[in-house]
Length: 108
Image (cartoon, rainbow, N blue to C red; front, side, top):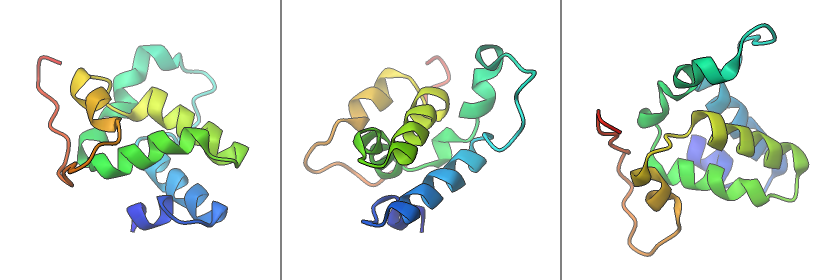
């Protein structure tokens, strides 16, 4: 369902998918009094449960024509996406990319 929303041609569907993913990653809380950099792992705690094709779509939405979707995807990539080298290579579009979940090593 999330993949369908994020890959939709409808801007509202993309926004809905980004909103769901953001909530899943913990962005639905009020953090006005919290230093986000100190709690960054809080936002990444569920990121390994999200499939690589979904993270690719979020990454690609950083160039979306809709400024709301563009900014939301930037926040998701910067705060919530796993930032190890495996993911950085996996986000680059490539032929034959698998549909599997991301495995984040303990030492990353």
